[in-house]
Image (cartoon, rainbow, N blue to C red; front, side, top):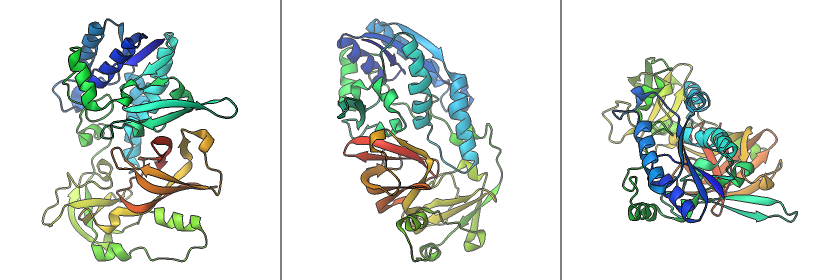
Length: 395
């Protein structure tokens, strides 16, 4: 089979290419150049240069064709511009999830297929399996990677059945140490290379510096909310329906300046996110202060002391129907239906017991245990056993 591997210059995609070659496939390596601006990265040089050189060395070692494709304009349009827009609105986007949906498994996949490839492979710690339903239709299952410490199924939560039908994740059955051991045994230059950090295909960046390319700093106030106020801020009403209760539980608290005490200044609410404690410059507290809310119109950040501060927690979240995505379309809930699932609201978070509900004017997720720092713009993903079956953008 002719397979294109997205060779990133890291150890995971390097071993992916090797494993496919060992299985007898015709392997072609493509490196995606998605960023050209080194001014916002923390390294001395733009990391794509080093990564592309390492990818070339791996391709030469394996004796497979190698090509660089420039997708920087597309990446800027679909990922970076979207990020700026979301942060401006006071939301917290996940560029890695978007990069997979919009770039790797869309335009990049189409490019690979145009070269005659049957499948596209990446170095994700995830698995794809398929079964056939009673009508003989093939259904693709997105499964968690075997390595619980590295499972990356969450980053693939927006993929469709069509995309999964053409995707391969050869290292999904392996652990990270096993992948590094294979790379060492065959002498790959990437064997001991550190995992990439930061934004997808850009590298490690100072997020405020990155955002300040387009978002203008503006001084605002930091207001501390105190425990006794947070605990009693939301009175418990009587609910006429489950949806009414879920709407209430998922609603964020709208704090006001007069609810607390001004304790500092910041340079723009858009540069921060819910649950953040670093970079606030707040002293004089026994525990760190965490952001519990942002009021974008008046540029106010509200904080509470301690990671167990009540205002940090919510037991439910809402997703607009237009933002609900089912990897398993055959499992999609009808109006009025609910389903018990395991769920997470960020990468590397342990799966939590939850129930999802579909109503005519909204989709809700209610957790057995209240969750800290539910951030608008992030993705909530839900699983049945180790299969990721759906996801959506938190509203």
